[in-house]
Length: 149
Image 1: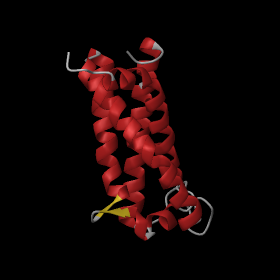
Image 2 (image 1 turned 120 degrees about the vertical axis):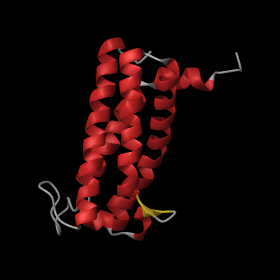
Image 3 (image 1 turned 180 degrees about the vertical axis):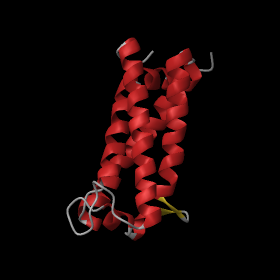
């Protein structure tokens, strides 16, 4: 069960939609190499400066092209678990969000100290991941306690 019951389930779903939308905007900004309404080159909120650092690539893939898949999976799992309350989907959602949350400090470090800029879309995705992770904490604890029963 999600913390907060039905309200928590709605929070998970809304956070997943927000994260997915931000990942699409981030990918659009990266793939076009252009500014968007909330990210302007040269300012503190400069997504392109964040996208251009070498650390934004993992195994030949740019993080902005991985994010829509991650948040797409998040959205699908959120929909399944909110509509059906199917335990495996909720547990997978919890595990993926807590796994993603482990990356957030490193990604924030890259933004602040390597790129010296903030990516608003990235920040929205970080907050989305944090919200879902906190709302699914109970499921994560259940998943870690599985003993083969």
